[in-house]
Image (cartoon, rainbow, N blue to C red):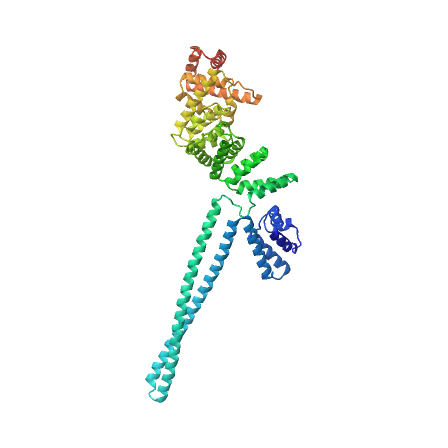
Length: 524
């Protein structure tokens, strides 16, 4: 607050609004306001720019003692908010003084070099003059002049000796200063790496207990927008440990909406490594709070997963999937997070192109697709249909064949059990064009038996779930495209023969009869 008051007093001499000043210095208005109100430690760049603006306004420089007081107030504020950052600032200041000392000694060394060269040149000149005198003068005057020259030469020799000693001392001092500077730079790097390892990109941020208290005050006074900005900044800069503590605190308050929004913001803005660590930490907290509840996604974890799947690139999603896949067994935990990313993609969280690139980036022997389709999800079949032609186009025929075989297994399970059959056709049509639907059917006919094809087409002919008229029309259109492609492949007769053979005794006849009539009535 003392720093904020001093900056406010200095800012008032500019006679301009905070908004105008924020525009001038390319800062956010809320950031300038928090600096001047003492809600956040002002950066050194902000203070330096404010001092320059005031000096230009007054046309006279600020007194050194006033500037020194500002620096002292900032260091005191940094020390109060974050001792590690304060130590780093002190080390940087000491490093700056060491750099200036090195520069001063370097200039002194250069001056001594020049003076030594000048004196040595004068010494050589006097010695040459003495030799000339010895040659030309043989009388008493010449002897007297030689004695005078000897005296001057002796004096110059003594000065040269002294200058050489001074140069050696300056060289030693410079070497000591350079070593000291290197040591300080090393300590600064270590401090910076330590601060970076804490996962905080906001040095000088409020301690977490103070942030919680501030959020309470903002919510009680109806300042929800400012509280939202504080939570957004926390999501973008706080460490994983602090984020988990914030989530737990919001959960204890019963504020699930803000808790889930905080988790989503972390997934949208932080690196894939931080998101992976955050998800594992949330899973550990969940198990500690209720060890018996091992199944089902906690809502916070669900928001992290949804947020990551919505914005991350396919390569980042693969990294996240592998991190969560390896974390469960390594920590002796249930593998709830193991297949959440692929299941979300199969559920239509992203386009089929993103899902195709994700599965294509996995190892050839990876069984993620088989695990992710272990239970039928509402849109799994439609996304698998859309994946097949994309895998064929990428040259990954093995994965395309695996998708077809998985579709057959799911279709048989749905039809035999007469369960709710999801409308795969509407999603498949939205994600594929006619050429891609043809590629799907051709691949399926190459891989599946006539019986498997019959099960697949029975699952496509009439989804047993409530859906809109548009969805029904899309599903019907996709089914007609598949029937046409089945006819082109020459397998239409085989599928009809399977239906005629009544090999589906455990299945209610309704779907089989309807499919048989549709196939027999088809005319190209």
